[in-house]
Length: 344
Ligand SMILES: NC(=O)c1ccc[n+]([C@@H]2O[C@H](COP(=O)([O-])OP(=O)(O)OC[C@H]3O[C@@H](n4cnc5c(N)ncnc54)[C@H](OP(=O)(O)O)[C@@H]3O)[C@@H](O)[C@H]2O)c1
Image (cartoon, rainbow, N blue to C red; front, side, top):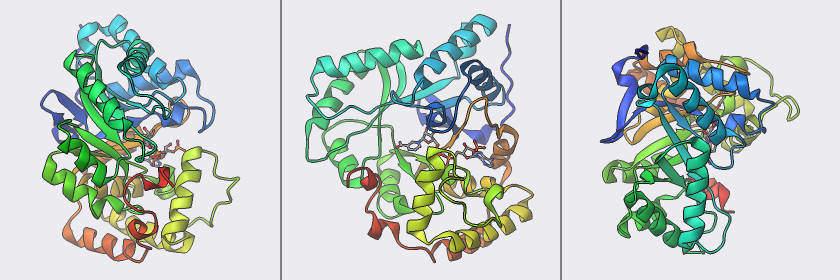
């Protein structure tokens, strides 16, 4: 019988809810959507097994990330067939539902959840993260009401949100809808959640799942000391997205200053810039986990990312990092609260 390895330390895991023990570094699957280069499905599923074996048990995906939900289904079938159904026990897949604007009837909601359940091969979705495009259209409350009923029917284990701003998370909770988490952009370049979202979520028991923490890979040793890349050199949707964020924040010279400081901190701890960038967000009180994108079967950073759990940043590290990030523009003033970039 398969005995799961436990290669990551105990502090790599946390309870998002009493029954969801997640890895605090989640594997992000936007990278298999097709917008980040070609992905070979066979190699991708093998890489998912390698992630599981390395202790990275938790996946973040969405209904619209190309074949991501199908990969989860295939991965689960392969693990169950080769190791027995109990090997699936610690594995979590957090998907999203990102509906087009329109009527949110029980039928519409139920059909969407049914499709995701079937694709992933699960009786109940571990965490269903809901996105909504237009706050002017209050049918998001209808959708959430139906989702809560489906949770009651055990088709969804927990409800969550993605890219909701603080005011609307507050309104949803006030409506009596319990959400385990909100997924937002959170990095040393984009610290907007520090302003309102993180204090509110920390006080309300809502976990934050951070994305964009590595700025698509720009916040890493690979770009330290490099001249500003052209748009054409940046070969994934993720790199394009976060290069724009860096430009809004302060531009390439200031970004290099940030990488210089992070490199100094990383050297002190004998780790990578990426490790420091993730640790600095993971240490923030409301943050339940950081999602790091994985181009499954095409690129791999398992060994390096495992080192995140051995890093302990001290006050001096935090002060040095804060001194450089505070030279950037205030993105909360410039863009607005979390997720506002999706609603302009
Ligand atoms: N809710 C939303 O609206 C939303 C939006 C965006 C993302 N997300 C979620 O967040 C996930 C993360 O994606 P992201 O786009 O934000 O990208 P990201 O995690 O900031 O960057 C991912 C890239 O970083 C590089 N990388 C990873 N570990 C590294 C390491 N140790 N050293 C150096 N480079 C490393 C890899 O680049 P290479 O592959 O080139 O090596 C990887 O593709 C997505 O997959 C998705 O699940 C959600």
